[in-house]
Each structure stands twice: as structure tokens, then as C-alpha cells.
Amino acid sequence: MFTIEKGAFCLIKKYTSLTCFKTWGENEDGFKMIAFMLNDEFIRKVSAKLPLIQNKDHVINKPFLPVSPNSILLGLMSSLEIYLKEKQNMAPDIVELKTLESLIGIARENKNILTFLSDFSQPSKAELRLFMEHYYTQKIPLNELAKLSGRSIATFHREFKRTFNTSPHQWIKERRLLKAKELLTLTNRKPSDIYIELGFEDLAHFSRSFKKHFGKNPSKVTSLVA
Image 1 (cartoon, rainbow, N blue to C red):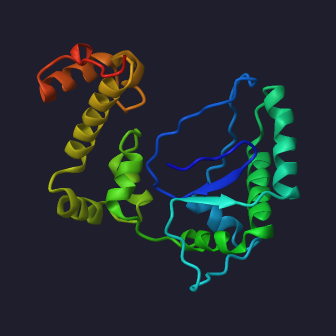
Image 2 (image 1 turned 180 degrees about the vertical axis):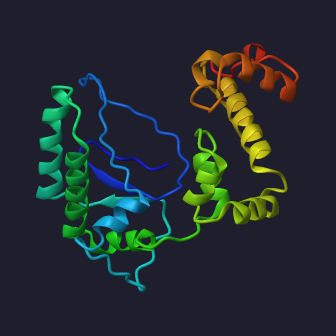
């Protein structure tokens, strides 16, 4: 469990699987979070503008990395409030500039924390199990998944078989169904609420697959939540 207090900043490491719980005080009317996705391609693109020097003496193994706030990061949040309040969509080049600004803000007083980004400034193979846990709900063709993981399609299939002892298609389908059962059991959500986010084409296909795998319709799963 990691708590991010009001007004705080943090980095979450790549391929971290998590569940986010949002809470607020009695005198507050809601919760708001702003997140930037720092993908490998973007980090490689800005590495020339923002040198990322690997500090071999500073190793970060934790998935959540607190970031010290400063004037750059606080100013960035204030500038984003204008877009949020007026519900304006930001142009892609503005999003890129704001993301770069967030990295500069992090680097200002958190140099050791920023060094872990240098691991992603060059293409590399992702650890397959962590990678698949991150992507299994997304509708991405296998050849694209292989590319994202830093592998050729042939290497991807070979390493997948060695790691999971099954095919990518079969593993993804079973993993989605297990997650569906978990959501239906541990929350009050209905099958119609979850099938899309788990990557199924339609509710009928999801229901058929669920019944074939577990022997009962998803609508018959009893939730443990009162």
C-alpha cells in the first residue's frame, strides 16, 4: 500500500500492476489526479534535451517513487487547471511540452530518482511476465505486442511458450477470464460493466467464454461485497 497525499507527486515504475483507491475528506467534494504516461519512445526523444546519466550507485527497486514538489511542478499543475476547468483538449505538441516540463521539474530536486529513466532511454527487452500482466487487457495484435516487448514475433512466441507453457492467445484469454471472475467476486460490478475493459469484443462472446471456462454464466457469480 502506498499513499499519495493531497498535493503530492510520485513516479510509478513501468509495468507496475496496481489498484487505485481514491478518498477525500468530509469537507471536500471529490478527488482529482493528473497523470503523465512516460513511454519509452518519448524518453528516448527527450534524452538529448534532458541528459539522463545512469548513477550505478543509486539503485531504485521500489515501484512507487515519491517526488519532492517544487515551483516548476506546482506551476505546471496550475497551468493544467485552466484546460481542466474549461474542459479543453490539449494539442499533441502542448501535451509533449507539458510532459517535458514535468520531467524538468522532477530533475530539479530529484536527480537520483530521475536516473532510473535512463534504463528506458535505449530499446531493451521487457521482462515477459511483467510485460504481459501490463498489456493482457488491451486489444493489440501479437506482432505489435512482440515489437513493444523488444522482440521479433518468432522470439516472442518462443519465449512466451517457455515462460507460460501455452500460446499467447490462450494465456491472454484465460488471464482475462480470471480477472473477470475476480472483479465479479470482489466488487459489485456486473458483466456488462467489465467485458469491454477486459478486451472482449461483446457481452455475448464474454458470457460464452466465461461459461465454457468456469461452467456458469458470469451473471450467476455471487459477489462477496455486501
